[in-house]
Image (cartoon, rainbow, N blue to C red):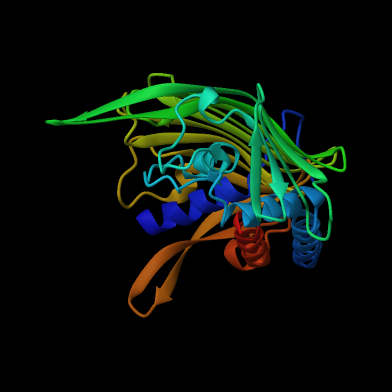
Length: 354
């Protein structure tokens, strides 16, 4: 049952879509459904190429390369292995990496990193002068001049104090970051970051907007409610929404250790799975069709219901397997149908993290 639930939630989280309009059911065949998935996979490949080859991504790579051997601007990777890993990636690039210091300490105030830093090819390092902001001017690959500029115009920190018996760990984390990267006076990266941190150093509420031309990434989440949490994440290509997660989770208690109800959305292009998962008061041998209510969509058009069929997985062992059931009663294995999408999405995020 746990394996089944994990597969179900994976599908729900990765490929779910919500729409408030009335869904239209259509008579679609198995071949047409596979063609829909294949079309979306082709578009995903195009999206990956566009992201990796964008001016914004290239500027990030060029700037990171200059930081490697710089003694004027240094940084270190945050050693805390928190669940806020993705938030730390943004902090690392915009704060820890370009911190104006020669020690290994992370900055604790905007004053510590303020300055104008201009790449000097003769000494292969940055020259520093005074500024009310944090500004770095550097060359992109192939340029003979400092044609790129990174600027942080606003930066605020909060102090986190964690107590472990006789040990006290006190440190600062950014709560607000506003900055951009321009190449040849054109904005290619822009960040508006605001996070409320809990007393134990975990983000509990956030609004983050990151633009890496031509992509825009939006993330907002709220973990301040007593027994529930919510997250909204979107990815745009220019003005087109290509990926979205809109999810709410209810928990058994205020400790938020045991989720009991999921409802929300994730979508990629035209592929959606919409519905809810209610695991309150279920028994170990419960039929998943009684507590998992999901359907596959193409845009706003319903392709089919997701049903679970008890099958022999290996000799002597049976488990429920998710299928898409079309209007004519025929079925396709959901995992087989969406496997190309899962593979390309994994490649997509691996490329983006790199």
